[in-house]
Every structure is written in structure tokens, then in C-alpha cells.
Image 1 (cartoon, rainbow, N blue to C red):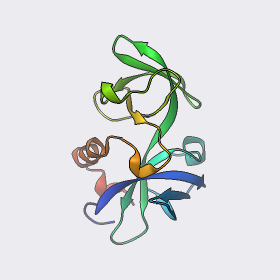
Image 2 (image 1 turned 45 degrees about the horizontal axis):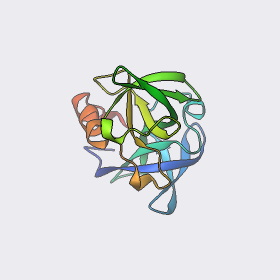
Image 3 (image 1 turned 180 degrees about the horizontal axis):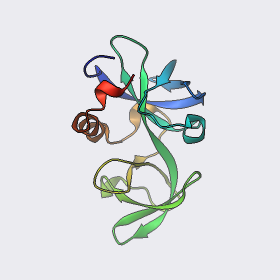
Length: 153
């Protein structure tokens, strides 16, 4: 892939292997491959139901570049959100928008790796990927600041 992707979009994982996955976005099933920067082992990191960011590639297959976990909100603690995520157990996350955090018992998207916090909690978990309130702009800035676009393939 040369240059920047045309855009990032959200999709929900339906099935995965180490190299590629089946996703649904906008009511359409599709296939995408994992970007080179996406850590391994992938089948242990990504499961059906996870929300991912996909870079639409102009000169090749669409690339999975990021994933959010679907976690259960268990409470609030000193302005942070306590969540339970099956692969990580209990985590404390900084809310992207405190007004969008569901109440305890609700589900929300959580991710790790973006600057500013160990964990970030975005919006409520949704049925349709395009309805997810997640930090695509922050993700684009992160990839640009760290020169990751050129390392996707």
C-alpha cells in the first residue's frame, strides 16, 4: 500500500484466521487481511464480535489496522471507567467522552495503545459497526505521527 489509505471505516469481525478475516460493515460481508503492524497471534487477539478499523486500500485488499474490545461496564472510579473484558479481566479506562459511557451492566468499546491513557473507553457497543462511536480521528493521527501508514503491508 502506498501513501495514506483512502479512509478508515469500522467493521465487526465474523470470523478470523492468522492472516485474514471475514467482517460485516454497512450490512455487507467482506474479507480483509491484517496489516503488517497488527500484532500476532491474531486469532488470540481478535474474535467474532470485535469491532475493527479497516483501511480501504487503493492498490490491494482492505487492511485491518486496529481493534476494539467489547467490554462490560462494572463501575466508575475516580473519573475512570472500570470494565471487564474476557481477554484482559478488569481494566480501568479513561473515557473519550464521559457523556457516552453506559451505566454499569452496559457494554462499551475499549482499546489500548493510543496515547494519553493505558486504556480508553469509547461509546456503547452497537449492533451495526457504522453506528459505533470510536476514536477514528485519534487513530488516524496516531498512525500519521508514528509513520505507520507506510508499514501497513
